[in-house]
Length: 398
Image (tube, rainbow, N blue to C red):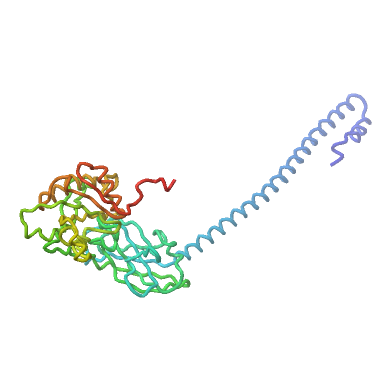
């Protein structure tokens, strides 16, 4: 192609022609050379464009191969993950048609234990907790099944990380309003205990059926011990449902024998986990004249002989202990006590309906409650005795 770039041979050839014909030939030769040079340059551009296109195509193929490789790896990971999930244990919990005819909303738990005794649903043990799993359920119909798998909250980890071994399992559906302990919630549904084994090489589906119902424990009423169960208008309005208020009353030994006598009142608030059922224990502990039955006779003789009516309150609630404080979560607990329950006690039993004859005491969380009530309602209670209360300020936590 070099000859296209050099015009001297053509011009020398043209120089052999004379006159105008020679000039015409040279002009034609220059025109011919110009056209071929243009075509040659176009060919060069085309060659370079083709080379560039080939390079881009090679790069594109490399990137495409990389993208395809990434897709293959991600697909393998997803397939592996699906196989792992398929191999993890799952509990299928069914609400028996024999236990209820209405849909149920609450918290479903599955408790596991490697111990061979006791009901796993009584857990978790505060000092030796074992695995358990839970999830919220909405409007579960009788006969419907719920899968408890890795989507559930789990302790100490999710269900698929459960170590291989032999376990005992029990499910409970907690929909009770009053108790922080699901195993005491009246009306809660629970299953029988089922034994099973976790094998890492095999997937397992354990079926549990909620066929049992937690019944209410009868309150041990006697001549001296009475139970109060009444609807609270204040709490019912706050929670938009019927809320019952509970209390146990311990009457003095002379209450039946002296029908005209009136008595001062001590309101007792139990600690965390306690309830008004403790009234029976207080009746055994306290005899007449405000003395302990554990004291020797000669020491009992030294007391002033004042008898009290003891009202054992119930601070138990779904979130632990409502401490008889008015709150955005538990509602007007303090107001319900002062405005509803105390007037009911004064109207039902022979009390001295005066703040000077009305006292409040409590232990632990009940100790905190008693202090709060005395400070908040100083005109209702004439004195407080708080024992080992929960922290009343946060200076030790700063």
